[in-house]
Every structure is written in C-alpha cells, then in structure tokens.
Amino acid sequence: MILQALKHESIRKILGKVEIITIIKKMEGRKLKQTEGNYLYRSIRPKLIAANILASENILKEINKSKKDEDHTIEFNLSHYGYELISLKGKKSKIMPIEELIIKIIMKPKARFIEAIPILIIKNKINKLKLLELASVYGIKNKIGYLIETAMMIKEIDYLKDLIAYLKSNKDNEESFLVEGDYEFLSKESPERVRKWNLLGRFFDEDFIRNSKVYL
Image (cartoon, rainbow, N blue to C red; front, top):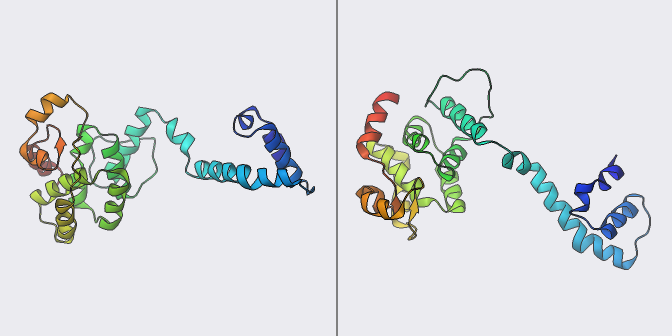
C-alpha cells in the first residue's frame, strides 16, 4: 500500500524519481549508496517531516473549507460560549478553545463576529497568557487590546488588568483594520478609542454597550 502511494502522481510533484527510488530501497532494507544516504537525510527526511506536520494540522481540510463552513464553525462556537446569534439546528462543529476562537474571528473579521468578542471575554474565563501568545504570533496585539478594553469598559475584569496594562504599553505602531474598509475614509471617521490602538474601523462604544444589554 505504501509503495503504491509513492507511485501516486501527487507524490511525484513533491518527491523526485531518485528520491522515490531511495525511499523504496530504504524500506526494503537494501544498502544505500553514499549519494542516496545524502538524499535521504538532506532532502527526503525534511520533506517527509514537513508533509507529516501539514497532514497532522489538517491544512488541506482548512484551505478547502468554504466561507459558509467557516461562518458556521464560528457561529456554533459563539453559541457554545454564550453568544447565540441564531438558533443552530442539525450540523454540529468542533468546539475550539475560546482563545483560538477569538483569534479566528479577528483574523477573518466580520463586524457581527467582532462585536461578540467583548461578550465572550466577559462571560468566559480567558487564558490570558495563551491569548497574548497567539496575539503576538499573529501580530494582532492592538486588536486584542482594544477588545479587552471594550469588555472592561462594560464590566470590570480584575484578572485581565495586568494584561491590558501590558498591551497598552506595548502597542504595535503599524495601523491595521479591524474590518477591511476604505483607508482614507476610516482614517478620518474611526472613533477616537479605536484610533488610540492604531486601528481603523467604525466600532462605537454605545453599540457595544447596547449589545451587552442583550447578552449579559
């Protein structure tokens, strides 16, 4: 079965003919030439390790997801964490850690999902170190800071005070959109508190407060 897989057309797009022959010889227990040994350790192993990582992270499945599927996953998880946008029936989805859900929403933002984040922060215990780590990896510390500040504007959250203090003192200088839009317009029309975080977006405190009265 493995030998058949090595002959698959898709494999030949990753591994060359010599590399495939070398793998087969190694699997059959035959002695490798010096050059084949070099192929194995310098070229073949790194490619197989990378392929294994990609497979374990379900990268192909993720990039094949439709926008509708992604929205459903977010909506399902929002409902799980106490923010039900619609009544979900039938198809379920995988529950993701709340910190990953917040990052997922910010990375592929829609206004209605962004508005949910302060409520999630208020209603659920957040692993602040994990959230900070993810925010740093994805370069969205300012967005996380703004949304935590928004949550704390609605309700005091003592355990996040040190995190918000850190984020305020370590803002990224580069401007970014909370939700994609026209730069020239948003640079003039974004609310002051949004701009203080070097962000662009038409998100208003009164809308977040109004939303909190529905979900809290």
